Length: 478
Image (cartoon, rainbow, N blue to C red; front, side):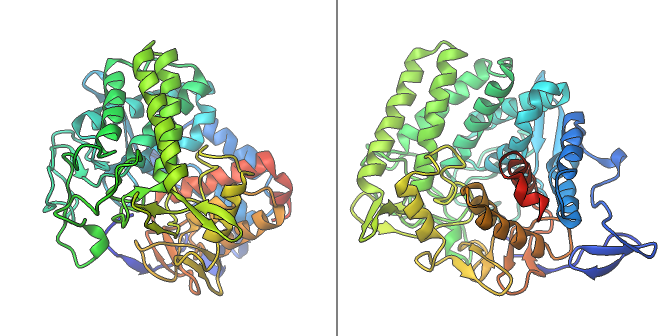
């Protein structure tokens, strides 16, 4: 996620403990797993409902190492990254990614997503979600093209790699990479919270205006009438950190999809119609239409959202599909001129993650063909080594598997043998830390990036809860 390539060799040993094998510690002469959570008094946020779920879930996990990893990871966002307060007279929640002191629109939404199911029974969680919905609306009002923001809406970026970007940088923005999913994730979170609780108090006039800005931004980035206002260039030895053609990106034929300058990995697109991002936008626009009608009674904007979703879906079907001998499957990026790129990237939205995001059914035939292609050597960023196999991407380079891709494989199958294999890979590649990482070497899990990456940690916890609900037999014998 970060543009600083801090590849680490790192082993996390609990205090007064000796490593016996991956993740197993000896304390006071006997094998045990010592909690890696901050002490109770130093946790950023505590939820009684989350703590109850942790206890209930741990009791249903047969493997003590896996139970230990779950307890470390599931509350990591709340324990370490959340600041709850007020801003401009409203509840406010700011969520950093972990080792980067800024809030990504994507990550902040995804980090708290596993707690949505518990919000109805926990007033403190409701306050957290209302604050984050308000903060997202504020961020969109500052700049709908930015992907990351500062805690202080008036501050300049604290990210050393972003301070000299050639773009229209604004106060409050940490990084200004235009990614479709940055506007989709806040909709997903707001819709999920509304469905879970029925609470509409956060969907005020400012939120309503922000959602109209989302729709307008998507329309502008269809680029039917010129390239629009957004441009981005960065002085960097890494080509994927900047964009082509004076920062406006490679040309597209305006077919109805949304032009993306950067992928969810924060790497530059090659062909600007990113298919997973566009399909995620279809889902998000339909969710937004439902909310606008039911909560804001804004039928006109809701109809516009539905019309745009339909237009993007038709364009993706017409231009985003690769026709192979075994049947058609989704491309990763296209340009509308007939050029298509097939790969998959580990960050979400990805082709692999489409059912997880509600962009298609898990059993959809085209998705199943796409999934098989993505998890194979047809995908240049599929890596298979002695430690595990999985998908990476240009962001951390060759050989580097992202645990997130392994989690997405487990989320998107009903095959318990496949799920068990994914869980096993996750369990044996945490390098003794009890936490997930951004990426690890296919043959050496002790070589990894980002020891504190809260989204990956919380997503792992979400997967374990999902398996307890859907496939408990896998965890009983894990």
